[in-house]
Structure formats: structure tokens, C-alpha cells
Amino acid sequence: MLVLADRAAAHLEQLFAKQGLAEGVALRSVHEGDGIRLQSDNERDGDAVIQHDGRSALPMDADVSALLSGDRLEVVDGTLTLRHARDNAQPTS
Image (tube, rainbow, N blue to C red; front, side, top):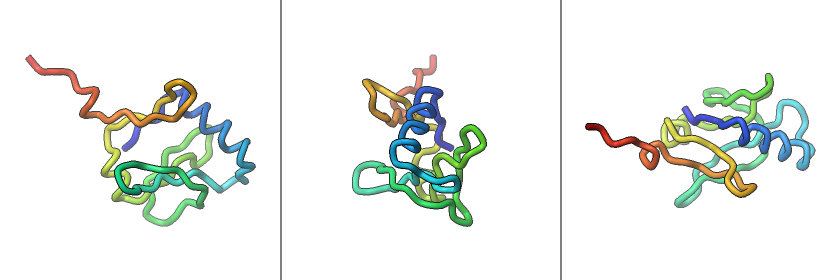
């Protein structure tokens, strides 16, 4: 499952407010081309969902969840940034 850093969670809250997303509406992680984009959507049956402050913050289908497994969503220079687990792996000795 994708890990949501604290600053990323706060950034998402700002996006919810800015976009005026009603309760029950979240930002869906969608695999598109070489990356992931966010779009407003509702949680669906079978979704993997990252919760934040009692709200479904990032629903994603099983394929996207598997693709992002172990990755971390952070904020870098004011932008949501996906850090891949393989990029953060520490060499083993």
C-alpha cells in the first residue's frame, strides 16, 4: 500500500478545500502513461483506500495499489511527489 507522509496528507486537505470536495468524494489515484494523476471520484467496491482524518483520501483500484506498493507520497517544493520504494532502498551488506 502507498504510504502517505504527514505533509502530503496536509497538502491533500488543502486540495480538498480548494476543489470544494464534498464528504465522500476523494482524489482517486489513476495510472496514466508513465505516471499517476489524481482526479476527484467516489470510493468504489474493491478499492484500496488510504484514510486520513476519518476520510477516504486516496482510493485506488487494485492494479494501481499494487503498482504503488511500498511507495511514499510526499510534498517536495510545494508539489505532491511520489517516491518509489526502489529509489529509497538501502543497500544490503
